[in-house]
Amino acid sequence: MPSNFPMKLPDTAPMPHAALAPPEESSTMIEVENLDFYYGQARALHEINISIPANKVTAFIGPSGCGKSTLLRCFNRMNDLVDIARIGKGRVRIHGIDIYDPDVDVISLRRQVGMVFQKSNPFPKSIYENITYGLEIQGISDRKRLDEVVEKSLRGAALWDEVKDRLHTSGLGLSGGQQQRLCIARAIAVEPSIILMDEPCSALDPIATSKVEELIQQLKGKYTIVIVTHNMQQAGRCSDNTAFFYLGKLIEFAKTEKIFTNPSQRQTEDYITGRFG
Image (cartoon, rainbow, N blue to C red; front, side):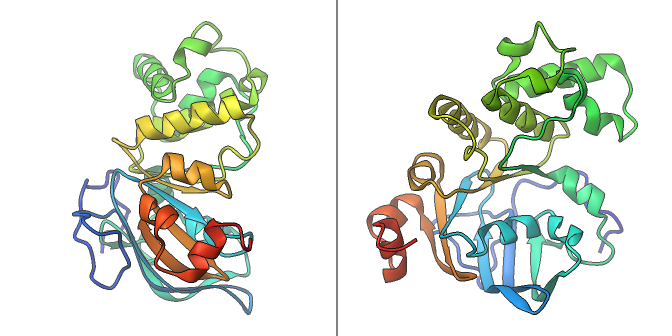
């Protein structure tokens, strides 16, 4: 086991037979095996098995409190920040590496597994400084390189044309949708392999939501994206694969089209058709 998490993940990895995965996928990025997760004595996740394919968009859907965000935060160990949170058993692997191994460097892991939150959270700094922050704490100070990364990241987040003339003004002065795309640009500036999105559009208006959804489609060719959403239509529009959770259990995981048109489980059908949730 390496002492540090790899600075760049390989593009492909073998898929374990134990993990539930959509058919016809030849590679995976995130593997979860028999994962139990607890907040204190309360069991939040029950024996989760799932393989999330590389360079696809995977949506997590299900009613509030079903474990979607808890599982998402397991992928970059954000749950480590909660005192009473713990893994009971099981493993989470990213490209075959158990990310909960004591020798894994969590800071290196989080560089490779970026996160965009429900509420946009730009730093109280300029647009330029928001993008360069992650690089500067790595000790990168070359202005030419920083300039290149800022432009590349903002273009990648479909924001460059809107802000290129005000890079040194506060990121807090942007609209809500622009702030969320700035947070996405900040996430991709450090060149992660995975981007986690926890309800990234829930606070946005329909036009801003549409722009973020278009951006997700553009980014998936380069990144593995996992999105938690309560918006069924959004899951249908954005994702290649969808996982349905209920009461801390993974009920079904399949191609998004199948989940929405011909689910295998009655619980999934009931949720999709609005009978509960």
